[in-house]
Amino acid sequence: MAYSYLGSPYTSQSSAIRTVRYKTTMLAMAFLVKRGITAYSPIIHFHVLTKLHMIPSTYDFWSLHNENMLIPAERFIILALTNWEKSVGLRGETATAEANEIPITIAYLHDDGLTLHEALDGLMPPVVEEAFGRSHKRP
Image 1 (cartoon, rainbow, N blue to C red):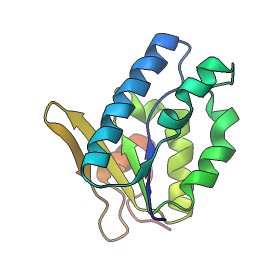
Image 2: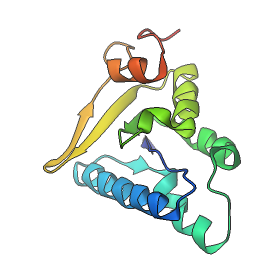
Image 3: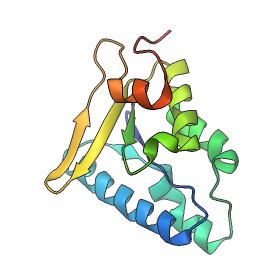
Image 4: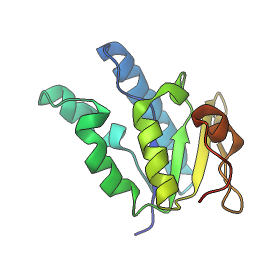
């Protein structure tokens, strides 16, 4: 089955910040589903699980699982929330997407919905290059 992987910043020392990020990611997922885009989000899938069962919410803990779900995805969508470019998890997921030649899309939430900025001809969206210091061309 073809699906898009929705990555978003999550890890924080603050439970309140994690909850806000979860709810915002849920809103983005709703917009994707309404557009007919089949998507998977580790934040949507595991936020409640980490809270109820005292499971770490760190990238180190989840990185292998996330990589296993990202590699078969047809597209990696980065949800550009506040400070997304500082996210250790998104940096790791972006590296995995690049290494596996998975197209990268940047998503921005706004009052009217979700705007997607697609990669073209194997190029990363410029905002990814600027945020992570990566070149536009994939290897």
